[in-house]
Length: 139
Length: 118
Image 1 (cartoon, rainbow over the protein chains, first blue to last red):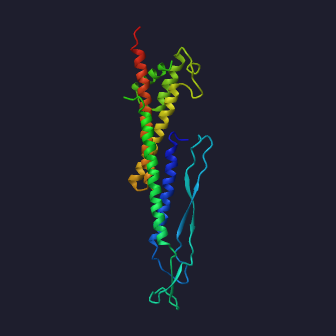
Image 2 (tube, rainbow over the protein chains, first blue to last red):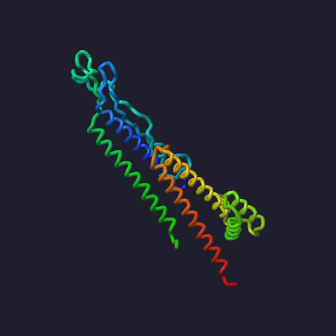
């Protein structure tokens, strides 16, 4: 166990939220990725966050933090769209556009960013607290 | 009793390179000459004060090394998480501050004893 356990916990949360933002970024980057009808559409990424158990010997209150345990993928069917002018369209003029929920992803992006900020604030407050404790009765 | 290992440790530190291992040697050399066994004089499972300081120094060294490794990674572009470096640097600086604070208090206590009128 580290001497300042709060940093490890906050760090794990920061990493998880960074991974979430990476996934959202990929979803938003591919929002216009059109695929031919006979190929799977772009599948949106969903990050599965999972709490980590505390290590033996950790004092009460100290948890293991959080980790991005797995990534789930959205529907490969996508949205079948009628675009006869598209070179990738089949005989019926159908292409696959990704089933990426823009508003959901933008909302998630804001949540992830706020969560990242939140954990940075935790690091900041913890650092200030420890510093003040070190300076007790100091000159 | 706790004052004498610090004194010898300080002299060991002043004499040459201040690696944690050498400080540990300084403390161990001082122990046989001491009249009172530090572990019997209220010492607990953690060992005497000198060893505690040496362990703390090792911890400081480790955290500084971690921060340095991450700083190199940041410079070479291999750092995946920016916060890993900044948090490691914060942790290293906090640990150093803590060790410096402990040393300052110890030296202050030593000086107060030395300034005692006999």
